[in-house]
Every structure is written in C-alpha cells, then in structure tokens.
Amino acid sequence: MKAKFIYIALLGIILCSSCKDYFDLNENPNLVQDPPINAMLTTATQKAALNMQQFGLITSYYTQYLANPSASGAADTYQVTDDSEEWNDVYYAMADLYDMIQKADSTDAFHHAGAGRILMAYQLGLVADVWGRAPFSQAFYANDILTPAYDSEDALYSESLQLIDRGIADLRKTGVTSELDETSDLMHHGDVSAWIKTAYGLRARLLNKLSKKSSYDPTAVLAALDSSYQSTDDESSMNTFLGINPWAQIARNNANNLLGGWLSDNFVNHLNGATYGFEDPRIAKITDKTINGNYVGTRNGQGNVGGPNTVHDECYISTNSPLTAEAAPLVIMTYAELKFVEAEAALRVGNNNRAYEAYLAGIQAHMDKLGVAVSDRDAYLQNRTVAVGAANLSLELIFKEKYVVTYLNPEAWNDMRRNDYQYKDFRLPLNAYLNNFIRRVAYPADERGRNSSNVPADEPLDTPLWWDQP
Image 1 (cartoon, rainbow, N blue to C red):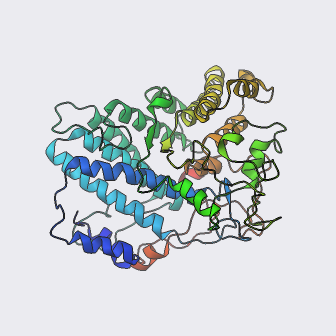
Image 2: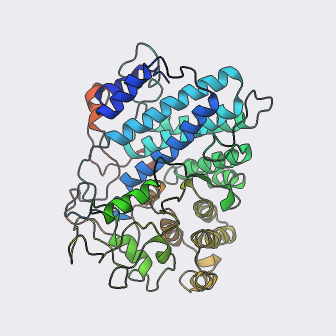
C-alpha cells in the first residue's frame, strides 16, 4: 500500500535499510494500491499485538519481570535508551489504521471502522504511557505538515477515550457494507460482540488509570467492566506469526547464547516464597527450575552471577509456559486482569464484597488459564494471607496479585507507577542512574532527528506523566 502520509514517509527516510526498502516497495506499480479492507484488518490486528509485545519488552525491565544478564544494563539501570524501533513501528501501525478507518468510513464498513478505532486508541495509549506528549492530531496529514506538533498528555488521553466511544458506536451499527472476516480478523475472528467487550475493557483500563486524579470515577470504571469480558473466552488474542511467538523467540535465542529473557529476582522471589513465605504454584507454569532444582532470578543492574552464562543456574522466559510458548497467543488484555481492575474500583468505591469476589476470581481465572492443578490452586486461594476476607482486602493485596497476572504486559508499568512502586521488597536496581524509580522514557533518536523543533525538552526520567500525579 502506497504511503500517503508525509510524516510516516519521513520515518522511512531515516530508518534502517529494511524499512527503507519497505517504502521502495510502496512505489512498485505491481502492488495493490487499493487493498481490500479485510486485508487491512489482518495487518491492523497483527501489528497491534506485536506492538504490545515490543512495548512489553521495554517496560518489563522497569517492572522487574526481566533483568539484563550484563551488569549495569541500560534499561535495568534507568539509563537513556533509544527505542526508535518501537516508536516507528507503532506509528506505522497507526498510519495503517488511519488509512483503514478512512476507507471504512467512506464505504459504510462500520464494523471495520469500529475495530480500527479501538486498535488506534490502544496503540495511542502505548505511546502516551511510555513517552507522554506525542504527535497525533497532525501526524497523518497528507500535505503541508512535515514536522507535526506534539499533543499534550491529557489531550491524548481524551482522544483515546473518544476513539473507544466512537468505535463502540460503529460496532453497534447495522447495514454495514462489509462484515469483519473471520480469517482476516486475527484477534476476534469476526465476532463483533467480542470487539465491543474489548472496547469496554480498554475503556475501564483508561478510566482506572486516573486513580490519582480528583476526576477519578470508580463507578464509571465498574460500569465499563459490566459490558466487558465475562470469561477468558472473550479475550483478544493473536497467534499468527511469521515464525514463532516473539517471547518464545527470545527464549530460543537465549538458549543459543544470544542472551536475553532473564527473569528478575524481584519477580521470581515474588513467586518462589522468598518474599511472601510460600510458593505461588503459577511459578512452575511461568518458568523452569534451574539445574539446581530451584527458582532463582537475576538482580536488576547486577547481571549474571554464579556460573558462566551457558549454565542454567537462573530462570528465564520459558517456551514451556503457556504464556510464552512458541505457539502461544499474544493477549492485549485478559479477563483475569479486568477482575483486578474491578477489585480496585470496587474497593475504592467502598463495595468490599464485590471487590473481594473479583480479587479471588482474578486469581482463579489466571491459575485456570495457566493449567495449575485444582488442588494447588485451591490451597493457594485458601492460604490465610490470600483469603483475608472482604473486610481486610487492601489495595496492596490487589496490586500484589495483579502483578503476577500482567506478567510481560506493558500495562503492568502503568500499575506500578500508579502504585508508586509500593510492592513488598521492590528495590531500585543496583547502580541505578536515578535516585528514584523511573516514570517515563526519553524520546527516541529517530524522532529527535526528524522532528527536533517539536520534540519536548528533556525531562528527568523520574518525572511523573500527567496521569501519574494528582
């Protein structure tokens, strides 16, 4: 498809040769210049899931799911990193979505327009939650604007909500000229009702993100959840890859000494009993034991200790896990996660009974999805530090359990910042470049090179984003 947006075209000028070739191909007259809308849907659904994984790889060092096997790794220690690839990929995806939405609007393909707006809202949120201010309102103009202005963080947030609301309205329309194709829709396989549930789940996420703001409305969060996922069967998942699941590729590379995917000692200790005094049975469904028969993580900023890198004396992302196996789907948002959103919102509104039921349901749903044995699941749920009763439920417990459920998902970093990193035994990395926990990421080099007049001035990486402050 021919690139029609000047800002997106400029990305290709500065990118690596593989991406530059993509724009060379766009000029090939043998390519389809007006692709079918269901083909555009395939691209859109796949890119959204892959971008979620890429952003999860950025944020998982900050949430200490992962740790760098090298001492003083840049992401581990809060150094400035260059995430140009992730920035460029998400803007390519949003350009494709803009094209799809325009085509859908002009042909009354309302359901495609709705799905497109939902995916646009999600990926715009990825950008805003990592960098803060970003181009959007001027980013996709076909003429004149070569260096688009940056929209404010609150404007991007409002835009995401509006996209979701309009997307829901589109999905509810009848008389469409083209239905979502079952095989082209890599997330919900043409199920319009499932798209609507995903939209409401994303809406609940967005509304709940404002928990530090005076405008926070937990009742609105709960109302959105009532129209969202009712079981794990409703989840949006994508498992169509050129090769294998990208998390599994990291695990495979690590096994072949291209090191990566090492689990942080914080996350491993969260599960293995070191932090809470008893083992969470999900650990065996997330990673593999070391050669010593135990679960050991790597301290962020410290790198490999003990045996050589080739010795399996620490834990890694595992291809044996249903979450990161070679054919495992990428899931943007899960039913279990939304039960914890419900638990938090219900607790904040004073409905402890609903909060406690959702809290327990979230744990159970996640364990069932991972295939934890019923006896192990029930023993965990009956542990006195988990089964505390509705009157004793706390935000600390909700965030503690949600942290396990959002493993490798970029949404976990939003939670961690909202909760001010207040997790038991959570520590700054060794040799951290900041005195406080990281709150944002520096703008990438590619963007600084092409849009320097608009890129915001550098801010310390421990400066909270708009929604991360009262």
